[in-house]
Image (cartoon, rainbow over all chains, first blue to last red; front, side, top):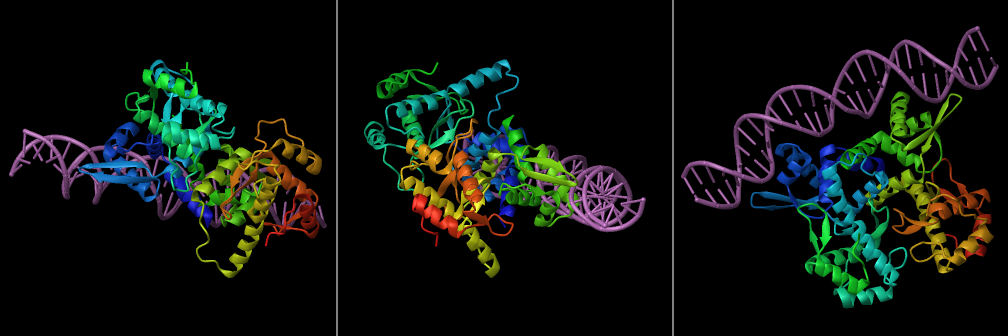
Amino acid sequence: MAADELATLAALLADRSRARFLLALLDGRAWTSGELAQAAEVAPSTASEHLTRLVQGGLLVERRQGRHRYVQLAGPKQARLLEDLLAYLGPTDPPKPTLSASAANQALRRGRTCYDHLAGRLGVAITDAMAARGLLTEDLTVTDDGLTWLTDALAFTPPATRRPLARPCLDWTERRSHLAGAVGAHVCTHLRANDWVRRIGTGRAVRLTPTGETALRDLLGVSPPA
Amino acid sequence: MAADELATLAALLADRSRARFLLALLDGRAWTSGELAQAAEVAPSTASEHLTRLVQGGLLVERRQGRHRYVQLAGPKQARLLEDLLAYLGPTDPPKPTLSASAANQALRRGRTCYDHLAGRLGVAITDAMAARGLLTEDLTVTDDGLTWLTDALAFTPPATRRPLARPCLDWTERRSHLAGAVGAHVCTHLRANDWVRRIGTGRAVRLTPTGETALRDLLGVSPPA
DNA sequence: CCATCACTTCGGTGTACGCCGAACCGTCAC
DNA sequence: GTGACGGTTCGGCGTACACCGAAGTGATGG
């Protein structure tokens, strides 16, 4: 019965600590068990048990390395699941923006990674610019022009997998769709590889470097997000 | 914290009986408390408690009428949430198709309602036909031609709400996208209002009537789904 | 080798909650 | 009225599980 599977899946998410883990892992990086324990404010033993459950449930994959246990979202499918759930909870702006939280929030709103692609104002700006140039349609599929541009300007080669080239991902700070899928992921890696964009600290927030700023202006006419 | 809300939402779904309720309610109709209790094979008292939780959680709305309590999915947003989750669980063909289950499955695969629109081979066939005639783009947005066609042939008037006109919905039997959103809902009601399509028994399965078959052939060139 | 460190396993505790049957409360039909 | 019926409330039972600290394992680094 499909109901049982649905309930089992939901049960996997139906815990405060596990939900915190997953939200943290939405940055697409691999975290160690200890880091996650600290982030979720639980004992290492507790975290360990949660992680085995999440791995067994297929939401995470793990990689043991020395005395560390790295876990990561199992794939785009799992990331998408979380995005969908967050989109449902959706428009929940922080009720009481404290000062430091607000500063962190500012950075997050300006630009951040969303699993493997860019989100926030930066992500939306890039998406809009690509759409304005006819590289994407309005509903975020790649045009023919877009494909040649990606190949030429960004050294993109379409993967052989069944993963969709491009798809919209709902941004919960901007309440707008932005570019995800294989192309979204490629744009993100390309920008990070060229140091056009850099992580702020250890979180998901990113900022545009000066080089990146000029590069994006030349490439797409993107003006620096305010 | 977003994690808490995610966990709370998931907890609402993380129960066998509640999941059964929700799946049943995916047909978009209003069910009584007793019907659901029977469908999920729990005592009426148990069902009653579950329903209050689901209503409080915002997934269902209720309407008391005489000694009956009717519940229904709260809206398209909630239906979509369930569809997304099912899409994640996704390609789960029945492992051991028994004979009667298989017959019921055949009917479901042929055509059914999916919350408020049509799915199964019938839903996909209609979607494809509309796309082939240029009424929809490949990624299921309504073209200008499509809008005039909908107005003329199906007496469609775009609603004033923010609900998207058309959007893709992933079909888990066909593994294909089909037409959902306001247009999808309209197509479904129109076909049922004209008795082109009729429910089989009390479930979600539907079948094309002879009238509907010719009507769809004339209108869209849809040949009867095998 | 020994100490440290990241992580896991285990035992124990507390709580949440899914379930039922029995009693109860309106509504409807006669 | 009275009785049947749909639904709810309540008490009680059993289980699942989230959590922790303490003890154990295995890699790392002096």
